[in-house]
Length: 104
Image 1 (cartoon, rainbow, N blue to C red):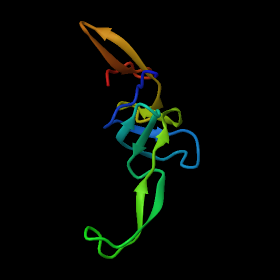
Image 2: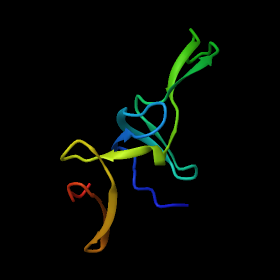
Image 3: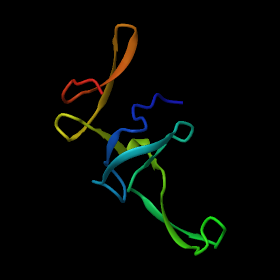
Image 4: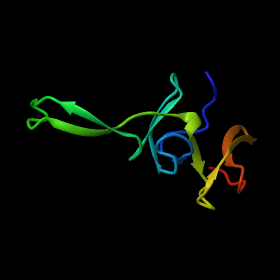
């Protein structure tokens, strides 16, 4: 298993695939499959039966996971896609933007 540099709550940009150029906030990260669910990106239609929770049923739009390699973190300073590095400050490891050298 590799060290993932994208965490839930980060704002990312899709750099490859059908949704290239889309931006959104990471909702969930699956470390086992190296995939992340991004808000408003990679929406799929799911047909649902009527139930007590959803009495109408019908078609529901839902976010599907995207592979981590197709995502790039957005630099908070320049608002552009950037690579992420890890450095040690004191006793802790921190992530930093390689474009602006700012701690994330």
